[in-house]
Image (tube, rainbow, N blue to C red; front, side, top):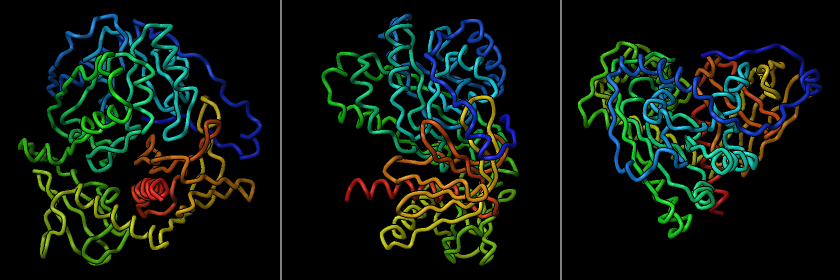
Length: 421
């Protein structure tokens, strides 16, 4: 999926009228029907099946909050299959509205900024639930998983659920990550997908629990490991491209400790610094072609990288500094390419300087518990996004080194260290 872009100078973009806030619309039923029909064919291809647990407790017209794990682009199609014909609004990242604002609003989408405080979102959700009697579909992780395990949930989620006081439903997918993992450049695999839809919390149960207890329940529900699921269920990924671009996730070599030198291609990941090669097996394990396999399990490798980043931060050695192409979002007409510059990330947060000295933006680490970073963002490139509710900056690294995953890990670990200080 691509996005509409336009070259415009930084000064000219600042003169544009920013997007104005509008209340969410009721989902247009005919569009929901079209989405359901179009979703049918891809879901048929993947042999989609599902199980519903306790859903008889929810009446057909009773608004609820639907929480769903975020694995791949097929998630919305799965939701359509499970929820149709229920009326529901979808919380969606604001860049999803670019070039198709009216269509997204008619579908019932509610815009928000990832990992940025958004007080208007809460008001919009209440408007949908209380005024329009609509359910809300939300992906609380906000970003796709890099390594197949859960990403952090916002601490405010429990408070939102307490304030809404409506039933909470959980949709959990199985096989969606294996079918189309984010790192693999939109190359889909032959994997069957299933889902479980479960009535999780009633209004009475919500009232009786503290928001901390609710958050603990949600944390348990969003605890998963897609590679472990593949291994335990004997799922074979036989495609010869299964390790393509795996270096985006496994950017650090455990043998020589070099960063940004791994290369995922075909079925193998090779360190260009020391030459060590690992095969990504059909069963989802990493296996060294010779010598020790330090981390047979990809999430363990990723967790080791997290430990390394945390150690760098504690020792005040953490720093990412790269030349980037800079895009901006200020309205929903298009994404504006405004020039280039330098993005720097340290324990003090992000700084972005560029556009011939006209742009100098600082993003404090306490503003976000995680980072909007993505692979192959709208088919443009790997991206790191920072900004405010009024303007977002999308930074595409010019170099071929993989820094996006490390930057997300770094943002999360810096935030946790600050909170625990």
